[in-house]
Image (cartoon, rainbow, N blue to C red; front, side, top):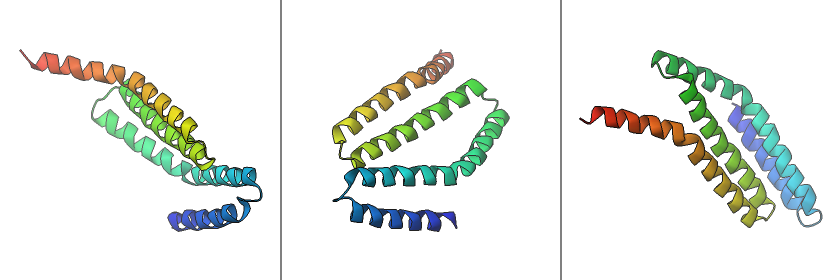
Length: 128
C-alpha cells in the first residue's frame, strides 16, 4: 500500500523537522519541500489514470474537450494553490499564504467564466 509508505515517510520527515527546526529553520523548510516533491512524484502516475478516465467519460457523454480541459485546469489551480499556501504556512508566512489563496480563487473564477456562460445559455434555452 502506497499510502502506508507516504504516511511513514511523512512521520520520519516530521520527526527530522522537529529535531532540526530550532537549530536550522531553513533546513526544516527544505525538508518539508523535499517531502512534498517526493509525495507528488509518488502519486503522479495515479493522476494519469484519473485523467484518462475523465477523458473517456467526457467523450462518452459528448462533452467538448475544451470544457473538460477547463475543469481539469481549475482543479489543478486549486491543488497547486493549496500546496503553495501550505508551504508558506509551514515557513511561518501566513500572510503570503493568504495572498496565494486569494490569487488562486481569482484565477479559478476567471477560468470558470466559459463554463458559467454555457450553463446560463443552456438555462435560457430551456426557459420559454
